[in-house]
Length: 416
Image 1 (cartoon, helix red, strand yellow):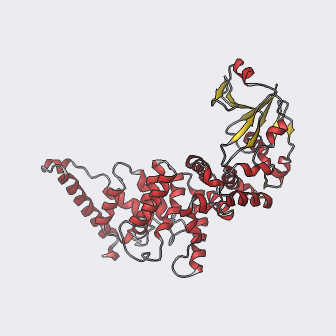
Image 2 (tube, helix red, strand yellow):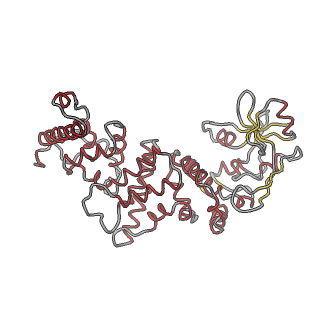
Image 3 (cartoon, rainbow, N blue to C red):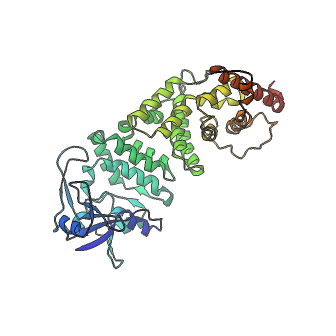
């Protein structure tokens, strides 16, 4: 029985990146041998086991043979006669098909180390096309390693397009799709993930709403369509250098749904049409609630936030109520951040002057200052006056509006 370190741990070690998880493959063993050694099997029919002490994953060397559509209909052979090379050839990319033995020696039958040196994402074999999830994984690795100069090999991109043409991606579960997408949005360059999927024609199959943002013509000309793509990609890239919050990164994209030819210049408090598109998208993919809620609200209030400096105090207080800011004040910080990365104000204004006499304060800074003015109003005096039920809320909001008005008159006289 021989044990090898494989996969991401070996790849990241060679790239001098932090190693998060270590996976192992065992050659020359059986399920029964591992169970006798107190390994815990993961899944009933799958040859993966947890080490009794480290809890790291150990898998029996195996060969897969595809039987049907998608990524689940495979016959798996994990007999003790399977070689390390046979196990490695079933992997997706050459950089993930390098093994290391207990002496530190690398086993690299498919030139993974060379591809690491050449910063190339290349498939191991033609079996790459048997698993449609590999389209998303390759796009994710492109996002993960973009800062190191990695690119996808031309022949691998060709195979990705072949998988898409066969509509194999339609067999992926929404949980698998979101799992890869979430990982991609945690990388330094999540915009690369979307760009790769768009380039291999996969975006329209799994994220047709986002694909629409890449393809539709804003306003009246192709110039604005190009401008839309520019702000979408560069804005997501920029915002990802400033925050790791996936709810902010993800929500940035959906602000663009509020930019449509019919009503972009109309004043509105909440864009229900665009918000409903985002809601259906998030529901379809089972996106976590905390991300979904921010995405929906940031889309619906895009126009409002873009012009918040000139909104009435009544509408601003109403906005705070709608986003549940009194119980969730962190949301104000999130929307303040997002409001500085919209179509008309894409470049961050976080470092603008804090001079209150400047009526051109960034929307984000103005939003935070407005909330600080109305956030801590006590209801004690309201209760003492005998207000009850909804009267308490109405009176509290009346006081908030009045206080915000007074603050704005004092600090922004040019507006009045």
